[in-house]
Image (cartoon, rainbow, N blue to C red):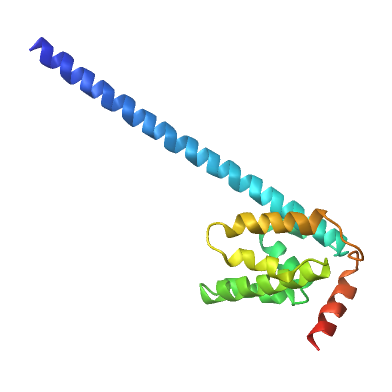
Length: 163
């Protein structure tokens, strides 16, 4: 009887320890994921702010505000910021804005004298965000010759290329 009580107690204790360790690992994983997401948001926002400054955008701080950053990217890519209203349409609107962002990013990368196809990294599942962040870092901080232009001049360049 005493041996059974000790055996049951030790089994319950080992289950408690295993459950607690598993719970702690999950909590640590969640905390690390949140820290990574915050760091990625800061990096991407800061990089877009630098790009906007180099293209002489009037309000580069838009890069830090969630919907305004989409408007800024669209405007830098010579689209109207009003296209961001498509975000109000579930699924189809989101897909349309995603495609517009890729096209706008393509144009922006070309304005900074980088290959526009770097923007396609956004469409790659899982690995794409890492590749996008690397490309964004190059475009933001690695200056190539003749890349400092105003937003108006950038819009004119894109419109000329389309003709």
